[in-house]
Image (cartoon, rainbow, N blue to C red; front, top):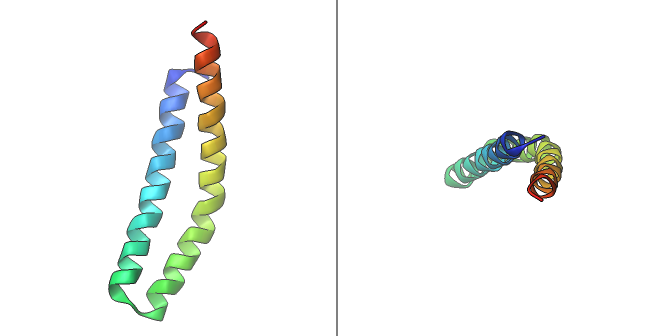
Length: 69
C-alpha cells in the first residue's frame, strides 16, 4: 500500500458518502415514503462499504506515515 492506495481509499470513501448524501437529499426533497425507503436501502448498502473503506484509508495512512520515516 502506498500513497496511491491511500488516495484511492479516501476517494472511494468520499464517493460513497456523497452518493448516499445525494440520495438522502433527493428523498427529503420528494418527501414521499417510496423515496424514504430508497434512502433507507441506500444507507443500508453504503454503511458497511463506507466502514471498510474508512478502515482501508486509516491503514493506508499508517503505511504512508511509517514509510516516510
